[in-house]
Length: 394
Image (tube, rainbow, N blue to C red):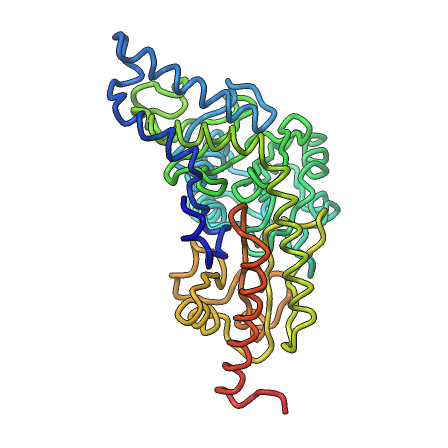
């Protein structure tokens, strides 16, 4: 990806550009046409590509390759983890623990299991920083709790949840834990063994890989049912002819992330500090939503409420007049009728604060000059919107 074309891109949590190394690696694979599951000589190299991809993902997660299963992305991985575990309990549906801030692919799946399959659910509520309490998690456990599903880092605020502590509590009660780590993997180091997770979802396009491919880490394959039956691919856990091009893309993305993510993380946190300082010293009244320090939130994400304006109007003007692309929430929820962020609402923000919120997320192609230009444009457009609305301070 030509960095020049990314000068105004501040929506890395929605998707990242494909790295040059990933793009180059995928091109020759198009010609490897043979079905990897076939026994002929053309298929040998294709199976080797898949094995390498599994090894690279395992290396990124601190896992064994036999615990890595490919999916079409994070949403499928989340659906598989939740349904695959709960399908084993259809004769005696029990209790689920999740949070009110999850991605739609978790919330809607849990809702389906509750409304259609007879399970019950407890939704943990965050504090004003966007964090779930381990004590609240422990209190939510019931005798028939059969699954906990909690995201690692929030896509709107970047708030990081205490997954390792939650897993320790759950393990004492023999409750399996699924972690949606789609926003976390590739931004911070992950060690599934240390975390103690049972299932972990990721998606390639969140760390400079292609769209349409992800993975589910499964600690014990006997603990989960397949969603897709048929040809026996993925050790009979997910049937369907393998997408070799996409697997190559996620393989190289995982390898690059393992080598470079510490540098990316430091780079992004430096930019985050720069942006916060510039905004705090600006003449506009604003609030940072959720935790912003290094230990408690992702380094590349800021959620900002600005007094007296509408986030959607600001995002439109930033793109139309300055070429800056930002978000007013999750890319997977922007097209829905209801516009209020369920994440910010759960954190206790007022409707006015939620309507005035924007999400800014950056990545390895962002630089300090872009941050300065962005803040200058933001201040200009906020002041203009306040003038238009007649609420500019005198």
